[in-house]
Image 1 (cartoon, rainbow, N blue to C red):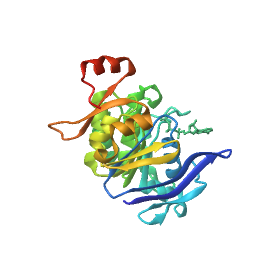
Image 2: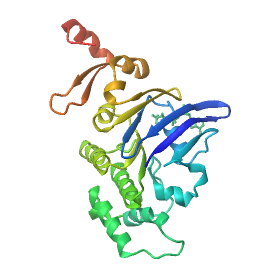
Image 3: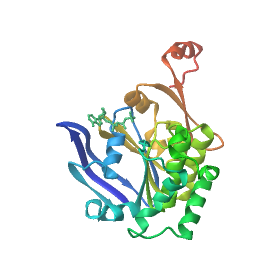
Image 4: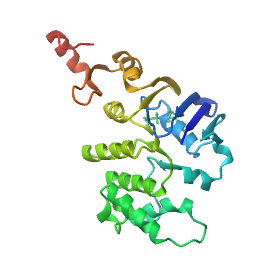
Length: 268
Ligand SMILES: Nc1ncnc2c1ncn2[C@@H]1O[C@H](COP(=O)(O)OP(=O)(O)OP(=O)(O)O)[C@@H](O)[C@H]1O
């Protein structure tokens, strides 16, 4: 699925939060949105997945304006893994993942064996197969996140939006989830905080700063020591890993900078 956003702006009480954002996600691409805290990543994503209404701009899925789709039609095309996981109801893990099938069904349609098989497979893919009968609300943050990703898989949408999907996950599941999204070759747009993960897994990166797109391109094009200094205010060194050929970032906290500088090891 091809996703296009043009001139998207959103503000609260006259204060601009996202300003004139253009972006494109090509079919099968995994695009990461990075940026400092408060730079507008979540607000931009919420405008795309329709929790917020853009004050200006245009969003389309395969050339069709998102605003012209019903919520059900939009949910058939777009799955969301957001940061908000609280629920007032005590659903089981199975129920939560089964909800991913709802956009594909009529109002009173019963769940089919096909739905059950998709839910089972989606749970297994994130390593949560043994948790099906557990209460969702009692899970750890990382387990909840894996269940929500599982729901998105069961939804079988062609476009996946994620807001810091690896938040709460230990390193094994961070790698597993990012790898899964990558290998599914589903069109994906995700806010990410871990820049090494973004460099490793994303085809392209969009850098948000103060509500605007500061830079965009492949990780090699976008991530430079100068950008990390300017946008994130951190000193860092970049290297290309000899085996993976991916960019690898090493950060230098202020307390270590003078130490390394005196040893002449700081290369940037
Ligand atoms: N409902 C709201 N009322 C007032 N300000 C808001 C509201 N929602 C977001 N903001 C502000 O908009 C800015 C962008 O917030 P947003 O959550 O989009 O940033 P973010 O890049 O996702 O940040 P983080 O990395 O911390 O998750 C922040 O300064 C935030 O305080």
